[in-house]
Image 1 (cartoon, rainbow, N blue to C red):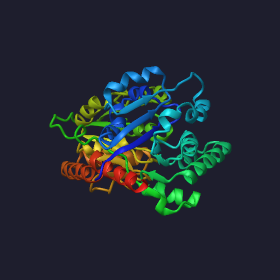
Image 2 (cartoon, rainbow, N blue to C red):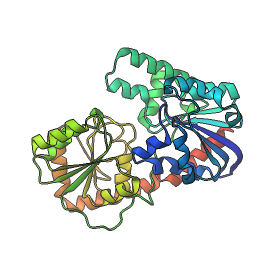
Image 3 (spheres, helix red, strand yellow):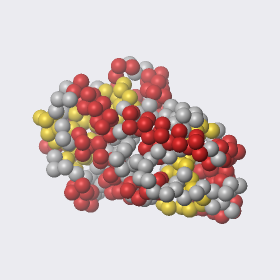
Image 4 (cartoon, helix red, strand yellow):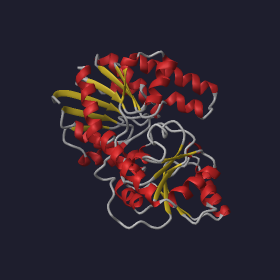
Length: 372
């Protein structure tokens, strides 16, 4: 791939998100990994974050040609997002490509595109409107999300989505031409998330994700409350206290670990016999891919975002999102060692072939070459 050695990429963080945010949720290594690789191909990369000056302490984690540009003035991120393009003419004037990390806050990148006459890539790790509809939020939020997404999609030179389902949703709801959309899945650090040979703890299963309604963790805890298993829950969220109380009430053997760094997460995965994701819906779940990359037999609910990654009893196990089916799936997988081995090996192979950072890097570079 020809290098983009004289070009500059400007990454606009999701509104309200900083490098410190990534650090706090344990994902900073994962989030910056692709850009460390991209930095070898670009002259320079700018990170426009919503953090304060403390974000600059993470500069030593990045190559020299990636520059952190934190929030310049203390104000609500909703206001700052509109002012951002006007505050950094020196940096944005150098940009050949502007890219959003997520849809929320993408209006800042749209404004910058027209101010500095550059190319715009709108990336959605998940389709914002689709998720809002599934959460059944207020109608005014639906209308606002639709208008903001329509604005961003219309002004984008290229749209990056992580799944075929999201692509079909955008084409249908926003009347976007298929040629304008490129599917680039989430990537996994397959060198960090890999089987490490450590001994598994018998009947130990692990869930990783935000503790919110979408993840359906109450059903998972109810399912394991009748099984001789230990459930490890990694992640935080608004439901954590309720879930802890529910686990005690049900007498379930559950350990809540909160957010943990990537290197510790890889060890926690490798100590477990099964990874499970019981979500009601998903975009393109990184946690599932990390479990698959560690060669774990993975159980997921048969919903969009999961069933386009897992093929039942080949590289994972699919079930319905109710406690009875979740419990049955756990028992079926725990009691079939041969199935565990087959699914685990196929899962690792799937990651190496389709979701490694090297594979995604090639797709990103091809996209930028075509734009320029």
